[in-house]
Length: 290
Image: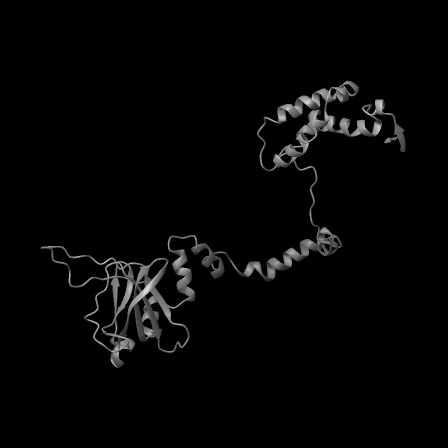
């Protein structure tokens, strides 16, 4: 038994009447016609990929039998065929595609502001100007000057300098207690440690007064003499370090008992000697920076 909703009631339909379009069926088709083919609706209903997919799903229900009963659907069918080969944006444009605009309203603020008349707000503005804003000028406001300096050439450094100690103070006020250096090579996806060295600064060298702060193209460095030994106390001069070894240095400072500062360089890239070519006895490498 086949039934259709006719005039608000479910009515039995004979098999030869199944393809006849009822009013309930015609209304959605007419709505779709106005939405897709009326210029005013098309301006407000911008297309995106999601809407294109949903509209294209209705194309299989449009056939000659339905178009014969509702002739305006011929334009809808043509529009859907054209839509199938059209490129539409991922999201709808904001020019005409927003049919509903929702805005959050602060009910408490609206209640407070609506209870005052215009003259009250004028009095509040005059009082704030007399008691607050007239006493501080842009030229003398230190906060505004600090903010504006950020956009200058050296603004970022000057802002940090106003809140942090200078580099000279940091280098001279933090004596190094101990430095442990690990030399490793790549072994597959992991590192294989070859040797570990200890830099012995000595009692005098560990104090900041014996260190020398020197300038370099990479900034300021504190230069301190030290003695290099292996962790087991043996002589480190007999250790051969690969040219592409990774170096990790753990720096322990006096007065800081927590995790040491770790500095590392992935490859020291030492020069290799060849026949008849002399190499330098000393090579400098930087392992990170404090």
